[in-house]
Image (cartoon, rainbow, N blue to C red; front, side):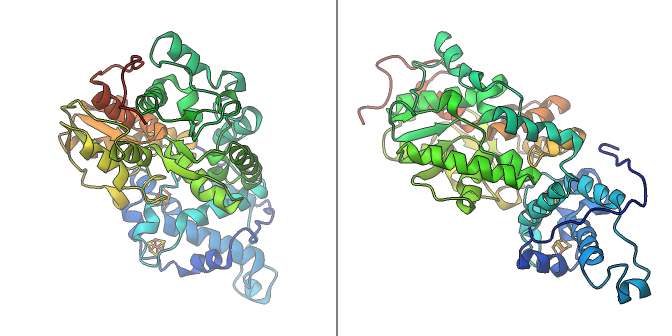
Length: 443
Ligand code: SF4
Ligand code: SF4
């Protein structure tokens, strides 16, 4: 089994802080009725049917820890002695941590839970306590966390090469100009590229298409280039809250100082983190939009004209952090409807019930085989629609679903929504820089 726990049995565990859990979350541990509905929907449990990894098992196991470390059932208490309760062991906590990290933080369990337990908030609070007690994250996930702290990205890539893609793209004539450095030249829109879009050449199309769309639509935009840092999503999902808060505060300060009107990001994880998680750390003085939302604005305001037919049958995968976490379901669908020639078909599981690609929450790093199987299951959902293209709106989902397409050798093409918009506005299938006279008429 992946992430098998090896530790001496019987060593008494360090205390797990309950202060990180709100009163509501402590009550939620008790509120679980053990109905098991979550087990029918959890993508991780679907691939690894072990009770401790389903939400019900997780809540039960953690409640037992809390009760034996703090409550009436402490082994040294009267009730504890009467009932023969044993101290919490390191082995137990390590196993709970391993099970807790076998989760993509997709939030599906919250939407099906009859008592509406805010599951992912709860998992993240427990992960925080587990990290603070020194039992998390898993060894296979530690690299991501240390890399963000040392290199400002999860891939151990040098800071100095974060904006390398812009130079290469300009040289290859795939973008007209390198986007301006917004820290030197003011702009209305900050395009926050994110770590995956900046460093992974396999998903560079997302950033290139976005830049070309902004050029076409005469959007006054810029990027932070090498000064852009990870949004900190990885840290928050892994439970390293202290490091997350530090990076969030620094990013908020940097963004606020730019004097921008809007921050636009193509990554569902960055979007959720900056919009939802940063709000708990500090105030921002600008709007935050996902690219799909900004595209709707550009098209409807006449700044971006979709002139060319794109004759494709497509289906759309809702990224968990864009859909279930942030409530953005309609904007990407509206963009697809506005592209002439597109035949759009929904998967049986969509919107709130969209099946996860398995890439989030550290699952891909901790349990790559489980992620691979989850991804293949999602790809089979897409194939069942008869679509030839699988569309999403997140570079991380793009990576995650490609894993399933490749493993299953599935006859379907993975594309980001920006790619279809680019095709429709330019009439080209290969991303290349717009000519000087191309683009929407005026501002
Ligand atoms: S968040 Fe998703 S993967 Fe995690 S327990 Fe809930 S349904 Fe399962
Ligand atoms: S659906 Fe909710 S109440 Fe039912 S077992 Fe899962 S977490 Fe508990």
